[in-house]
Length: 520
Image: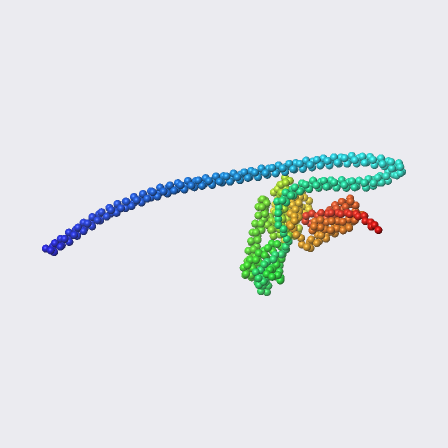
């Protein structure tokens, strides 16, 4: 009985457990679903609130960005307006300057016309005076024949001798006055043009050199450069075509060569080898090839930069390379590329002042010394070589003639050729542009004094201001005032024909007569 009751209770409990478990299994998903729905609704509400906040913040940020962009745009517009105002002021000032210059030119033209009229009037007066003088001479001849029983030929010779002696001084004075007047007029015009051209140029002082000095980290490096039995230095000199001087100068060697391109390659090669430390024939060949390639690129870039600086286009690429080679060439210590660019600027400025083709003038000025880029490799003077190069690479006849005539080897055929001569002289003669070797300087001074002493009546002479002025002292009993004027002209012509010199030489003829007595 008890066992049966126990079994029934167990069964009942099991059934109750099953029912409860079933009910739990039935209601648990429903409860989870309700809870999930509640969480989902909460998440959605939070997301909607967050989205509203983000939207409001975005609207505020957008308004702030729009305000800043508007403020920046207004600032930019204001700056541009200020730039436009400044540009307009500059243009107005430039127009005023041009108007003032035009007025000055018109005034000078009117002055020249007035002087021409005065000169024509003076010529007519001289003709009338000559006719009147001839009438007087004829009447004097008749009187002399009557009084002195002289033949007509004898009377004419005597009168002409007196008239020539008297009028020679007047003629010389007249010529001198007219020369001074013409020189003053020409100088005024030339001074304005040259001052305008030179004011825009300022170059550094240069010195002449045909050697490069290479610094060494120590004297031990000299032995490594020489190598075993001299194989390294022999290889360097043979491949580079230069002389390498190993002297007693501490921690330095010297590279000597008249070819500036080779000298530059040698300097670059040695610097690389010294820095690297590996110096042997195979390495030397490799570095030389690398330096040659880098120098070719540097030459090309230097030529292109010069053309870009001057605003010149359409030049043959080979000719541009020759222009770049001038960077490594000097004349009396003056860098030839800088000199050519400076000459081009001056020439272009003068051409613009005269109303000529400015681009053509710049082109001629840049190429006037192009022959110096290879005159150490090609036979002939730099003038001949330059003219051939310009003609070969399609430059105009004006440019070719300007190159050929810039040292008066051939006549100038255009105004631009004369401008190139002037610009070349100005660039070379400015203070600090060039320097001479002592030997060349002494020879030039000696030649100048020898020319002056070669004229009759010269007592002594002195070259002053590094040969830019010569003072000639004459014997007063042999040279009179008129003779001193003529002697100065003759010396000037002799110097121009026999000497080659940069700039100008001023000739001063000094005549002093002293009457000295001693009272006892």
